[in-house]
Amino acid sequence: MATPEAPRALPEVRLRDLQLTVSPVELVARVVMFERREVTRRSDGSRRPLVSGLLSDGTASVRFTWWDPPREGIERGVVLRAVGAEVREFRGRPEVTFTWRTRVGPASPAELPRVDGEDIPFRSVKDLVAPSEGFRLEVRVVRVAPRPVTVGEERRIVYEGLVADRTGAIALSSWSDFGLASGEAVRLAGAYVRSFRGRAQLVLDDRASVLRIEGTDLPDPAELLRSAPVPIARVEDNGGGEAVAVEGLVVGLLPPSGLVYRCPTCQRSVKNGLCRIHGQVEGQPDLRARIVLDDGTGALTVNAGRPDTERLGGLTLEEARRRLREQPDPSWIEAEILERLLGSRLRVRGSGTRDDFGVTITPESIERVEVDLEATAEELAVRLGEDRR
Ligand SMILES: [Zn+2]
Image (tube, rainbow, N blue to C red; front, top):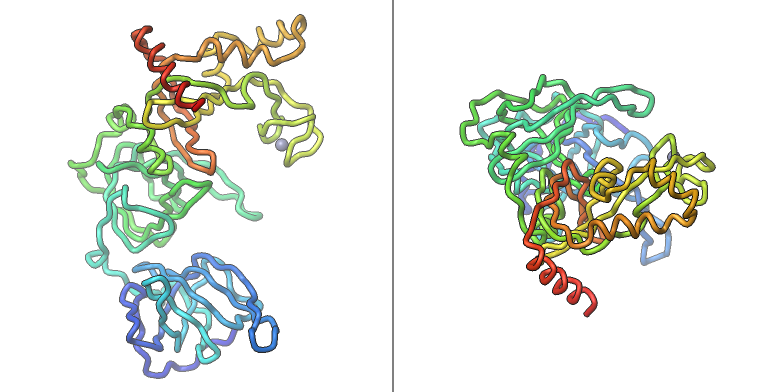
């Protein structure tokens, strides 16, 4: 990539101030994500390479397209200066295009526009969708803990947890040590939101700033973790969420439930002695239950691990293995857990993610709620009836 020459007199703009009427422009921004593609020219059928993706300068994120990009030098996180970028409209929003007339070269993060904290709008947690940045946020740290991770060859510590305001909670992932502690209230600037395994996640890196505040309007973490259950339909509409609480009746179990075998290395379930990642392995027996919970507004799946399955299903793994000697077909285990659980009312808290099959909750707690048996039987009959229709 060539370093841009002395700039012509172009307006250097912040991405938040991009206007369709002012073009070309000069800008400095970071590549948040990108992909390389080729399009076929209609005229002669030849292939033309392009890179498209998302740029951000801390004030906003915009889509970009780079025609005939260089083979090297484009990486996630790299800061670029583009002189002579065209501003176009894409689905009602400005986006930038680098053409043969645009000079694009590397820049230093120090050249990113200075973002005055007072300038950046405040957002609520419920309005954070991925990808986004260029906002300030006041939140309570509900919990945070360091976790070692390997990034390429490098060992790093990421601080993971959960933050919340009155409107909701979001997973936190901080790549810098801001000394965050559970319970404190903070004002964040320079953070961004990305989608990770289907969940929105608030990411802090060394560009972010953290200011301790009093946070008198922010929820108390204990209160947040004990919040009242919400309708399952709302959890579905939200695509899951953090610190979700729901309550409903058990209407079934999904496979695989009961006795499963797990890879000793990655804990994935093993099929016919094969782990999807590690190949032929000696599967370790485990108990689990994928519980279908219905509250009349909707249904979701709760992935119960061994301790919850043993407690709720009334059967320990040890006992199951002992009885397998007399009843070698393990299908009785799932049947027995289902019989014990069907029609029970459970209150479940945890984090939820949504995929094509609906919402799945990874529980932090599952409690059985005592109920009026007759009313429950009736309610259950109605639900099951609806399912068969
Ligand atoms: Zn494995």
